Image (cartoon, rainbow, N blue to C red):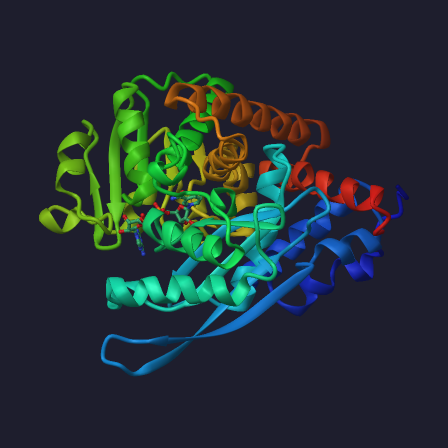
Amino acid sequence: MKATAPSEHKQSQILNRKKVETLNLFESTQLIIKEAVQKLGYNEDMYELLKEPARILTVRIPIRMDDSSIKVFTGYRSQHNDAVGPTKGGVRFHPDVNEEEVKALSIWMSLKCSITDLPYGGGKGGIICDPREMSFGELERLSRGYVRAISQIVGPTKDIPAPDVYTNSQIMAWMMDEYSRIREFDSPGFITGKPIVLGGSQGRETATARGVTICIEEAAKKKGIDVKGARIIIQGFGNAGSFLAKFMYDAGAKVVGISDAQGALYDPQGLDINYLLDRRDSFGSVTNLFTNIITNQELLEKECDILVPAAISNQITEKNAHQIKASIVVEAANGPTTLEATNILTDKGILLVPDILASAGGVTVSYFEWVQNNQGYYWSEEEVAEKLRKVIVNAFERICETSQKNKVNMRLAAYMVGIKKPAEASRFRGWV
Ligand code: NAD
């Protein structure tokens, strides 16, 4: 490894083009990768290799709709770096899916897999569509069409998809069936997040929230906060946010605020989470049943010990970061805090647990699912939970140590830990 740092001129190229606050997801990801590569002493060639996915496939998928018309959908599959092993990452069905986002998310998957020490590189896929406006039959035909379109570059030892925004275990089941038909053998290891009867893992549904819970416990220890009785605010009440609220409530924490796309609820005495869980709909909405709601932005600035953004990106920015009262911010969502806000929170002494660590529980249990499929031997929910805890605690410690040793914030530390494995694997393979 050559310890030549990129020139000052090159380092600031991205920054010069745009103000940090206006960088898109892909550009800000590249910016932190550049810093991490430099801090680790790799040369410019390593950055050139890791700054973009190794390959991205764009596909056009013609689907017969229920009214007999043909609609052609656009989909993507991005594979960032496969030096460590097969690539791994979810498939998103959403109207806002675009190539830049899929590329950035595949890089994040490489980082997540690396900090949790999984034998994978990062991948990601998506289709531009609105599943809320499609019938069951149309969704099945689209899922199968996507697998046919990308079948050459995916597989249990090449690239393993999983659920992501607006995709679920039923969609994974259709995709697995289509792949098995193409290959003419049963291929449960082709995809994770499947229903249990098709080789899904116990604990997969709650894995992301469990990972976040473990990060909260570890961060609370560092800050000398007792989780029992701690005041917690969770933005978003979907898969990640609602299971997390339940785990925290059961652990004796006081969940003082929750929110969804319509608004937020805040009660300093603590909310009745079991009641809210009973009343929420399948899209994670519950606040529409109440009249005393506040806005999502107001909620983020309320008094609490622990704040968990678990909804969408760009929620904590330079505009509101100064008003955050929490001692700990744990990013369950992807990209909820901008780079400038990250610096503001760190300067305020807030312990920020970055997204690529906090939300890594899902891919970790996906890996467990793949291992169980390959072995044909299945584990209990307790075994899965115990193994997950070891992985996340270990990752948390490595990132904290890196942060302290190098005097960098937790996000940059996570990128430094995350870059190392694909970088070393690429070097040993003689790619750079
Ligand atoms: P979800 O669709 O199940 O729930 C999203 C929640 O956010 C809902 O309660 C919704 O009402 C709320 N929401 C939507 N728009 C909002 C807005 N503008 N303001 C406030 N709230 C809003 O999604 P999820 O699976 O819980 O994912 C939430 C976040 O966690 C996403 O950023 C996702 O990428 C990330 N994540 C999830 C997983 C997972 O396994 N579910 C894994 C890794 C990362």
